[in-house]
Length: 143
Length: 143
Image (cartoon, rainbow over all chains, first blue to last red):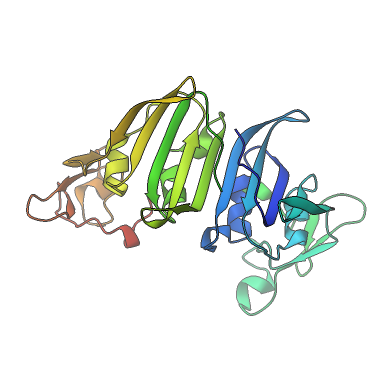
């Protein structure tokens, strides 16, 4: 199953199968008024199955957030029915207000106005809250 | 934007724009391992915009639940690339375990094993809990 090509917009490809909806929620795509397609479990030669998101409009996406969720994602920018740019993700050094710290004793849980900042530790791929060192664990968190 | 035709499966069409994700969650489509596409805000001659869901597998859908959410939905059954059946929805008389009663004093909030049953009143299109008469209000409820 494939969505036919779009004239102008963005294709988020090679999303790990099952993570498409998470990205829809993370990027607030459910609030968009332009056509948006989410294809789950599409066949993929490379990894068996993948999710794909197509957005039929020029939109600015939070690429740091995408790289944080899944660095294997590619973002294709489409103009006049052709790919004009292919962006590869990388795990960002830090993400601001992408995920919230779940530690109830963290300063961000008390001071509501503070930004939620997670920074990647150089030794591992673990992200930690810059205030309280709480490790980011996807399974325990709602994005 | 359209998803190309599928060989075998189900197409849920004419979903009110923006309600696609609600149906994904209601029918537990996020747990399916077959390809599933959700197209939001697709152009529609009839009503301007609509959502469409395509499922590339034979699946049994809860048609009562679909009619309860949006009676304008049509369900097309596809075999060998052709529509072999077109089902139109109707608001069902009652739905069992589709939505939960939110009244904290309702017997279903106390007795966890009881089925949640909502019945449509013959005079209006309002659904009420058969135990406590609580009206179903989509805005107050998580499906």
